[in-house]
Length: 67
Image (cartoon, rainbow, N blue to C red; front, side):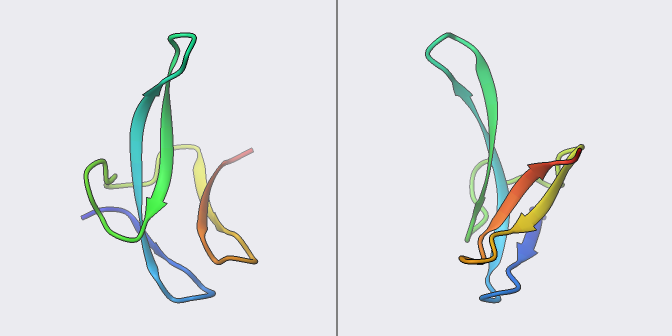
């Protein structure tokens, strides 16, 4: 089962995904994003050191690093 969160503003469910992206300099980074449907790249759990917050204006979930 993919990690999901429900928006407090609009009540929609969003699923956490990740993918690897290679930058122009050759460095590879992991991108995390939320989608309305679980698809390829859906993650089972929240990555260590991150927390889910929500954009107050749009209600979209955001992934932020813990301090």
